[in-house]
Image (tube, rainbow, N blue to C red):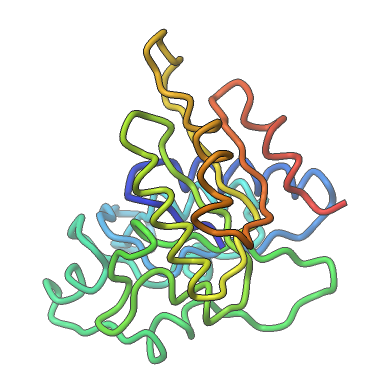
Length: 226
């Protein structure tokens, strides 16, 4: 389960890299992004459809073996949290009635690997009655928490880890994602997390990674099953 501290911090970047690495290992990756907002209407020979850009990246990285509507069934036009985007289209969005069925988590082969991406931050609304974090609780999957490696990320990252810990959700990794090369004044967030995590979440046993475009595959490979 890929969650994040905020929107735009690199969930899809991490998810697509993981999906490709897992596929190369010979695993059948079942990528899911049950709801996506900010979709684009496109016209094809089959008619008008909605392009979910993030979900399509995940689908392609997973090998493209499942139809787009299975990977992401709930697609909304407004670039807002899914429940608000759904309201703009005159509909409600229920967690148990819409979101969980959209995941299509039917049993597969033993080597199937589920990779589910939320929408926005872990405490962003995902349905009228649920936040993104509810996906981790409902599926029982461990979390990879993605945050942006920048000044100011430490507070939101520690708060997110504490929230997951208090809910009894296992966090397998915290991934500090760097969009640009660090300058001389950049904070050492990785060292700060190592220092503060034992005080904030004593039971945390996941990995702490700092990645960029060049190091992402090497670092994320350490998260793959042995």
